[in-house]
Length: 133
Image (tube, rainbow, N blue to C red):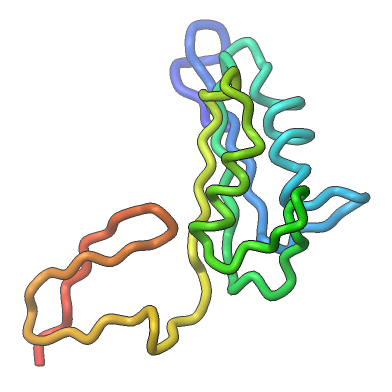
């Protein structure tokens, strides 16, 4: 829970973070969005229906298929499928998938010189500066 301004006058943003392969007591990354973040925490009076669901993607090999039976192949697909589980009334819930998979030739950039390049990390844009040659 991220809290600002104290318990009575402030606000809180519940944050639930899971690894892609989360499984506990019948829960998965697909069900925890609702049963943990939405049902338990986003209804706190200081949260006002807000919440952030963070999932760490490590390649998706052990990820259970989604409720519709389709297994995401990329972090972007996982994020889109998780967002599709939200109703319009749950628009204050944000889903973020962070790609923590090891680099491959397909997802690395070659740097030349020291010009800044843009790197994408699970929907988060980050400025990266290449090392000096």
